[in-house]
Image (cartoon, rainbow, N blue to C red; front, side, top):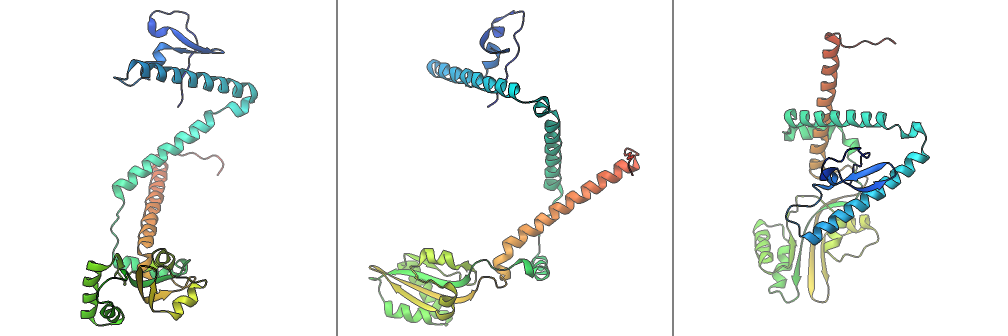
Length: 274
């Protein structure tokens, strides 16, 4: 919080001009703390808030005086930095408003696929990913032999029976096996022990892992090893963000170009070093 002190005035015409603190040649007046205490605050709380405010103001002014005494004039000249900050802030606010008003955020599947095909070198996997179905059952769950058969079946009817069974008996399950997930995320759910993820993925498909009270079932439907080409579906959200960011940059470039051309046509640009 920044507190504004002001130099002592020669005329104290009312209570608001009464000095309540001084640090060197900086003074804090009653008027400076008028809005410090929230409305309706108890009297004891009000006094605590005011004391804290005044203490912080005194501390800040003390440090400011020390800084001014120990910095040379060049380092104390903040006008240029303030102007640069103001210019950057105004430009940023204008660009943000321009983007809010004019940015088209609709992206077709065809555009995403085209972007993916043209930028495949940018979509290299950093982690192992897989398409998987898994569920967790108590060892006491009924019909486990049937469950194991449904689990390994490719029959649509068996898949439906397995899903209905898991909705009723499983304590955790995941059937969205067309989506890609990180192998590391699966390891947070399933107690798989492996020191070589790539070899494990290559050598396992149907996995059953018991512990003291549960059985974990995992069906690895597909996988891709890190440093290979990342699949389009796995990168869809990432590509959406990339395309939107490119559109933002293009909007800003067009605005900068238009602003320059407008100033040029109105003869508001003079450059003596060309």
